Length: 391
Image 1: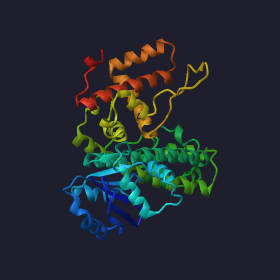
Image 2: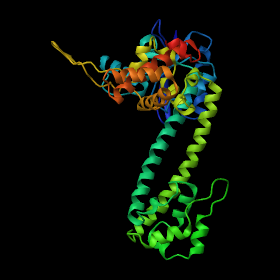
Image 3: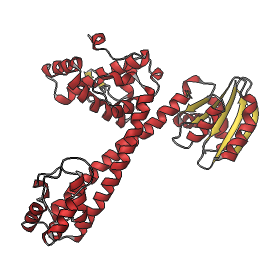
């Protein structure tokens, strides 16, 4: 087999070609730039091997090899990713003390002959990676949004602590619009009532705001809020950031839902699993063929209990391992909350664990493991969810 190893860098990559049967270096290590011209140079040097048994290997180093992988797959090459820890260990075994791009490209090419060290990359895998980027960004934006909302409430507690006693919904359009103009009780108390009414008016459909300008001003005049310019500026700034981010979250959510409809995965047939949660779980799992059994998937998700043994001592109660992606575990716990609500089988299973003396979190963990076993069956057999199959 022709093995083509590429040591990936930020601005340039280094490639080498060898025959793994004879060990002969067919193409000495050469550099090419991380751009269209460089990719073209690589293709001109390796295109002769595309019709022979071959493989192109590179370290799975995050985003640096993403565009190169896309290019090579489009050209019809077989691409494999290698865990960087494997190349590091092999480098130490060979007594190579320093990292060298030329030597690393030959090292990577050599590893392609050992099946346990690499995984084949497909266009489906790249599609799932793109969905993973979207779902992770969605969750990151949501987490940051919650943090900024908490910061907004802290600032309001300083300048107008009574504002949330009024009968309006926090973060509603009227709420955010009014406070962006009048972020403190001191500003509201001395403002003309006509301007306050104007600031409360919102365009579009929906129920009118139950709060009146008169109620707000009366409350502001009796407020114990501090006349704090810094906190006022923080309120205005945070409202602008929260509103902008909310628009970004809506756009991202729509894109994820579009991807979900295109994939039409069996995971979405499970009652209670939404597009966002389903796509998060699916993207974090990746190719279900990588798992020989459901237990491997449970371990990958970090939902397997830790084991602690020493001599005759064997710990009976241990927490879950929490290995792997925190996004996957978070999505699984979010999913199981609604699945237990809408699916009688899971509802009964949760009740059974509670009756056995398990606490809420422990019972949820058992339900998550059951959910992973169901997901494994649906994805590996490409079938839709049926409650009858679980009895």
